[in-house]
Length: 127
Image (cartoon, rainbow, N blue to C red; front, side, top):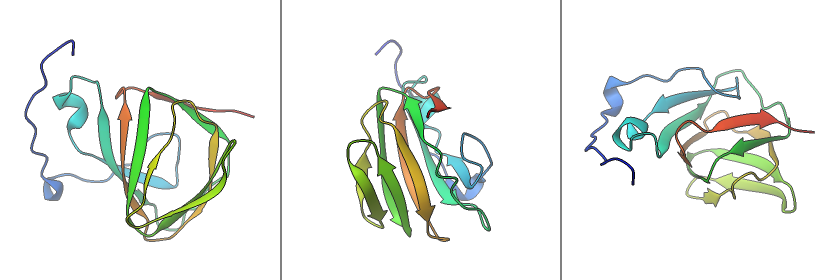
């Protein structure tokens, strides 16, 4: 590690969900990990935005590591080379760095935790 990590206790009832990122149909609540890890990792809770649906656009994330754990509901993805997958509450998905994928649909009550490295990763649409 280039810099020492800091202790972090992120209190969920003192933070709010906000709109950001590639997907307008989700809201994100930062968990304070990016600051505590000096930008090495980001962790956030993602939930479905009421009345919004997935676009089905192919995209990739320029990162070294990405995984998500479904807390509630379900989500359907298509992954290049792996086909269609449904992740439901209790499932954990490790997306290899740079894998081409697209979200097809999700439940209205979807909530998941996503962890990505580095914290300032980029997402981009692909054909």
